[in-house]
Image 1 (cartoon, rainbow, N blue to C red):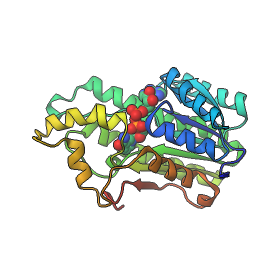
Image 2: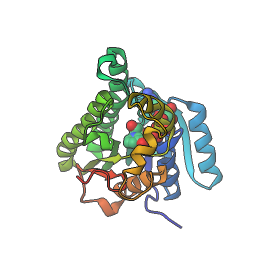
Image 3: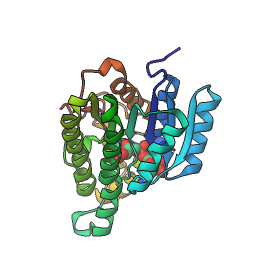
Image 4: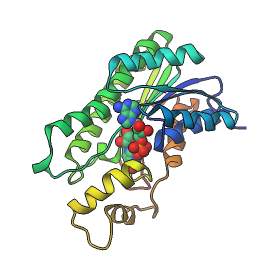
Length: 261
Ligand SMILES: NC(=O)c1ccc[n+]([C@@H]2O[C@H](COP(=O)([O-])OP(=O)(O)OC[C@H]3O[C@@H](n4cnc5c(N)ncnc54)[C@H](O)[C@@H]3O)[C@@H](O)[C@H]2O)c1
């Protein structure tokens, strides 16, 4: 019976589907009590029902990570349901692709509100509660696009580089207080964000014939297959667990060898 997070309390944002769902399920299977937070409360509720059916502890919570009051309320809800929070996974995020000429300021601001402000607020409110306790782990979802450039993805690339920066700065500030801050950099993961949001737009922007942007990316992965949400959840568990107790500030590639730094 896995129990690497036994008696710990975790928050996972964007837990209603995709990578966040896989992390919530894995953490619960490892013995954590999980607050599954999402803008889509029905989706979060369905994930929680599955966790409880499997014998885990979880509660669903509606939160929009763009809004500070809702991020603070999310921490309150986790504390009230389960006790002080040990692990926070700032996973909620959105994708988007556009040619530079057509990139709108509105789309830029919307993406930064979720992918950057949302992570900043999660880190800020984790710091407020974890620093006084002298313990805690924050896992931020960056991306391979947080380390390298990608055509037609200037906004997403900039946002994910910002997540890597937030992770580094917060890790240094909180290291003396026993709080670790790390990031994960997945590559091409089979979720709605890639398959349904990015793939049609990128395929058109790259003027591909006979193959999709997804197919082209996957063909270039050294390990020869795309990633599954569970691959990312494995790495999230690894970094959240006590076995990583001397690891902070890193942005770990989880991409089958695409980006080797
Ligand atoms: N899919 C990939 O290939 C990939 C690669 C690298 C990084 N990532 C990152 O992993 C994270 C999860 O991506 P995914 O592929 O599982 O996406 P997804 O679209 O499948 O799921 C995202 C979840 O976040 C929720 N969400 C969106 N905006 C929110 C908000 N403002 N507040 C609260 N919840 C919100 C959605 O309702 C959804 O449940 C994102 O940060 C993404 O950028 C994904």
